Image 1 (tube, one colour):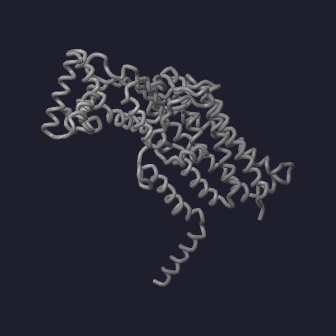
Image 2 (cartoon, rainbow, N blue to C red):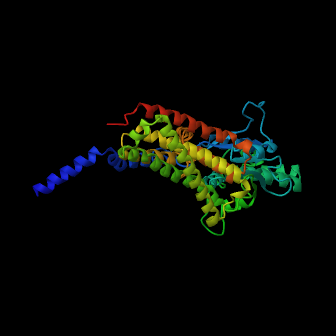
Image 3 (cartoon, helix red, strand yellow):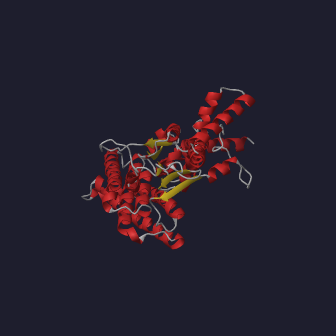
Length: 445
């Protein structure tokens, strides 16, 4: 028994000396659980999306329309935009502004409250919703939240529509007489101020409560189903209508860049095999500089990464029918920029790590955290606002942006320049750091 305990102490001692094993066992799961907690509402009071940019155009003079805008503005899921931005002369957005802005991904959802918010004849409410549904999970959630906010004001709107329709058919005098008699009956039966009740009835507030926000589990309908039948929502998908397989197109970029990072990090860790084999000594005895060792490995990684991404997307084309060839040149450019940025990250990790095991542990930690926060696993909008800002400092986020802009939005080369510029900037900055650290580390012991 004593021998077994001694051997166990030996195993624990070896385990805790291995920082890579300790990191993979404890640190990475804790960090990922923490991130998942934010996404699924464990670490915060409110779950679901946060701060999704939503354009709202209010063309109606109806007071209830302003209530709808206020309701959307107070919803933490949305960051409501009603005016022009980006240095343009400030003015209210119009419906004509929305489609070009959504094609540039200024925002992915828009609500229009048109002048004919209330039907001129009959009873009903008319609304418009524009979308750019890049992510299916986010899209379904946003559509539900929009309908919840819009339906909350539906009873009052329908009441106004009912009053307007009644006024058209029976005349204003008879309608006022009916409202007066109804207010009198309500006041006599249930109590209350008759004048206040009559004003509420005339404004369309019949006291329906939360009819629009309630739900009915019966297949026959119920109050919510009745309200929904009287609300006509025109929906338009502004971007992505031509995408052949939306589901596969949405997710392929995230998984491709994550696997690319793993492959390039493993390639970068091959530095340590060359070191053990004594290759560094022989190379540096020739007219070769340290930075050239890193740049050669960088060039190899870029070519390997470009080939891997191309093969992954081609597999997506064969398996799921993803449209590659209508914007193929721009796709190659994004793949090249993404491969450069990912390779640079691999070079930096190799330059910082003292051993192959440490490089493996650090790479696993960085890649999994970047994939989780950068949007490869779930929508970035489901994270708190501060983590959405953190996501923009990851290679995964910008690579996915580039792939979505090519495969989903089919942007031109000029429109892709900002994303390409960010990826190339990441590549240059990270490689500069990698070379600086590599020149200062000990290569020989």
